[in-house]
Image (tube, rainbow, N blue to C red):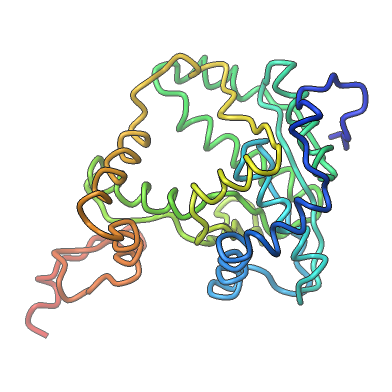
Length: 287
């Protein structure tokens, strides 16, 4: 692993689009306080995501979500009430050279001290799951990030999933998998002892992230995948469009989907699964 600050890479973000760093950081606390900072803090307290003594690895993909997450954590470190440490960790899964340089330049621009490590995940996903590499890629990325976070002495891995990811995942499971489960704000790693995954942007909406990114002169990476670049028809985009269309007819339908994940009435469902055991309402019907 190497700590990189962008020395020697060609400039990809035009100077005229750049905003002074102090203004970007001030905007998080001031201009975007209601839409970004406050929901970030609320999620941390609601779900007990950070505690004194934590060492958090913030996963940086170079996309809009992870770059904002990094800046939010820096502000929390500087102005929050928690005593914790930070590492900013990026994996190069086989990026094109220009993509890697843009990742480094964005982090240099935003004063994010990036630790980057190599992997061959794109190559492996292409070889073993050519038709649908995204699922395999995501699982391998997670495992690699856990492993490197552990090496750095971290006990938590922070990912940049947001409110829209939560409701889209919920709907994907209902409509395509026939189950009701969602993306949790935190979970314990099954393979890495004493490691926990956290999602502090759980309450932050994607359109607010986009507004911040555009106003800050940030040129984020998209997926940057060399394997699935030409694939279309991703189910998550179909769900995104579905929810967008539903909002035209049903006011706050996105809020209702989110609310449903924390208001499951166990006396009004046909069944549920816990610890690999499936239960039916009939099991408790005569009680």
